[in-house]
Amino acid sequence: MRYLTTIGLEVHVQLKTKTKMFCGCAVVYGMPPNTLTCPVCLGLPGALPVMNKQAIRLTILTGLMLGCRIAETCKFDRKNYFYPDMPKNYQISQYDMPLCLGGGVVLHDLAYPKDAQKSIATADKVIGLTRIHLEEDVAKSFHLETATGIDFDRAGTPLMEIVSEPDLETPEEAFAYLTALKQTLLYGIVSDADMEKGQMRCDCNVSVRPEGQPEFGTKIEIKNMNSVSGVRRALAYEIQRQTGELEAGRKLQQETRGWDEAAGRTFLMRTKESAHDYRYFPDPDLLPVHTQDLLREAQAFMPELPAAKRQRYVADYGLTAYDASVLADDLALGTYFEEAATVAASASPAVKPKPVANWILNDLTAALSADAKTVVDSPVPPAALVELVAVIESGKISGKQGKEVFTEMFGTGKAALAIVKEKGLEQVSDAGALEKFCDEVLAANARVVADVKGGNDGAINFLKGQVMKLSKGTANPVVVGQILERKLKG
Ligand code: ADP
Ligand code: ZN
Ligand code: MG
Image 1 (cartoon, helix red, strand yellow):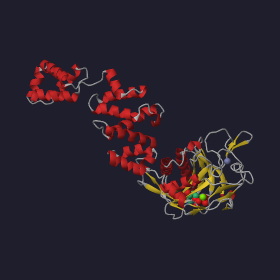
Image 2 (cartoon, helix red, strand yellow):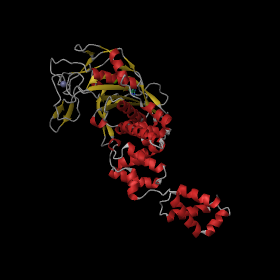
Image 3 (cartoon, helix red, strand yellow):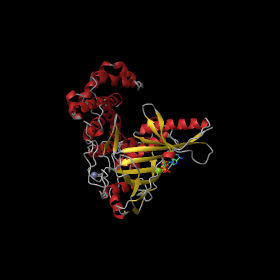
Image 4 (cartoon, protein in one colour):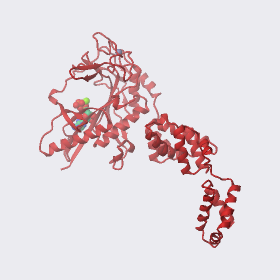
């Protein structure tokens, strides 16, 4: 019996605003506990919320980037529950009138885990979105040995909830979904979306059913995932567990589970019987929002999207789809490449973008990662890298010498030409000097010369090698070849 998997993700994303959703407290990560609070975000009785328009703009922008419909009017509701992370006993959220509806996330090849990129079932699969709504984040609990500490710095941070349709079919697709979604959020500068910092968090809904059964299997939710690779592992485990249960003839029941990363397994948290009834109702402190003006303002911040940038790199710079994708995958890397390509185009003679891209994708990327640096703090700025490529392309130094020069540039911050001069690497292209080397070699190898003249073209390489040797490797091999050809055949 074959089993089919269905996965839907609920992703929470903290917005990159200066202040919180309903008060003026600053949104900053990693401050000492309870230093960014006021009566509103502490949930004290009687405090009144004031809406943060920028949070609404950023949510609308997210919706625009993901192709959602933007509601003309949205409203805020109270989601009632009792827990110390929310002393006013309700969270302000959106229930039946969310800001964004529909839309989707495209799973491009590079978004998949590296080891799964060769076996993608459907290229550029689109995962539908159900909705995106805006709410306030709650406080963070720290479970200490004998007590629980609560930090309200996070409470009231604007939080988007992005809910997907149950369109995902494998843990690898879930991985790609989160990667592609995060990329879009970074492109729009709507969030830093760092899962390790809790700025992006994910609940995974997963079910399995026997092939041929039309309705979905029983949905099981895995709460609070905080890494993309963790989501992949948790889903793989859970699919196996659920399949095992069904194969053993047992029934699954709707439940919420947690993920134990160290043990590599999920564990039961609560069953459906203990599910909350949140008793949503419209928050009487907040008026419904008409989005017309905010939508127009958000449109002005619409960035070039990753897919468009990938296509532009192929069309404008003649890169392969793969190279374009790697460069566009990282905003900073793309910016570095575009700066370099601009310098290259205005150099004289102009340098082609393709070898520049190759140097970025190979040597620069490797050197950066070996030093645990990002491209933003690269010791070799774009213009300096272009100078190196220009020196190589002009034939002054060989590609192999170029690698040596690059290592020196990366280590010392010196310019390519300066290093070439300092090390005396410059290839001798001066015809007069090379002419002398060639004459010397021709005189010393009369038999080979006769061979070449007799039609053995291959023997010319031997002579070329001798000239290189005589010049101690400094001769420009292209020019040497031309001189020898002229002397032997011309
Ligand atoms: P709930 O009301 O329990 O939150 P929703 O219908 O809102 O459930 O769905 C929450 C998430 O679970 C969505 O991302 C949805 O796509 C996904 N989902 C719904 N049904 C299933 C299922 N049977 N298997 C897997 N995922 C599902
Ligand atoms: Zn506050
Ligand atoms: Mg739900």
